Image 1 (cartoon, rainbow, N blue to C red):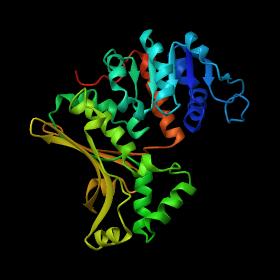
Image 2 (cartoon, one colour):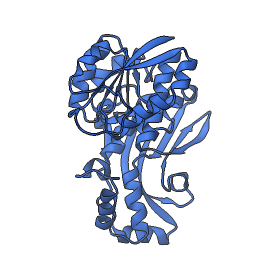
Image 3 (cartoon, one colour):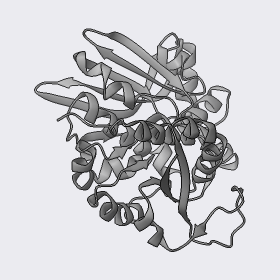
Length: 320
C-alpha cells in the first residue's frame, strides 16, 4: 500500500460530502493499493460543528498544503482559492476543483497548468454528470458544430414555478427559502453562473483560450409570468439557455432566456435537471442530462477525478 496525502480546501456542503465519500469508498482506493491520508481541511472556524468523520483535521492554517500530494478545492469564490492554489500548482502538484468562476475568470493564470494535465475539473460544469471528460477526449475526433445547454438549477426551478402560476418574485423567494438560490441571487438568475460554465466548455470544443468576456449574458430577471403563460399556450417553455456556435471566423457564445418547443431535448431532459446537447458533424447530436448541483453529486465527480489521478490519467486538457 502507498499513502497519498490529500488536502481539502473548504468544508461546506461539497467539502463535507467529499469527506464522506472518501470514507465510503475506501475499498476502491484499497483495490488500487492506495491509502488516503488527510493532511488538513481548511476552514475559517475549526471549532464550528460539522458533519464530518471523527478525527478530521480541521484547521484555519493552510500550512498543510506543503505536505499534500494533491489538493481538492471546494472553497468557491476567486481570490482566496487562487492565492492558495497558484503556488501549489507552480510546484508541479495537481489540483481538483469544481470552481467554474475561478476557471472562467482566471484562465491566464491556470491555462499552463491545465495544459500540463495538473488541473482536474469535471465537477465544474454539470457536477456529477460527465460532460468535460467526453469533450476533452473522444469527441475531439468529431467536428464541433453547436452546443446548447441548461446549466443552472436555480433558474430551472424559478421558471418551472412560474409555469405553475407563480410570479417571478414569488418563485425566486421560494427558491431562496429552499436554499436553491444565494442571497443575493444575481450570480444565478443574472446568468453569470451559466456563463462561467459555458466558458469552460468552449475551451474544449471551440478555442482553448476562449475568454469569459466573450460570452453575451442575459439573465431571467426580465421574464414575466405573462411571458411564461404565453409561451405555454404556444406549446413552448422558457429556459435559460447557454449556446455556442460558429459565427464568421469565430464563435458566438450567449446565455439568454429562450422559448423552446416542449419537444426540445432541453425541455424534456432538463425538466428538473441540467441538460446539454452537443452536435458534431461526425458524432451527430448527443444529449447529456443529470444532476447538475448538490453536495454528494458534486463530490462524486471530484472523488472520481481523484481516482483518475491515482490511476494515472492526466487532468482535463483544453484545446491547444
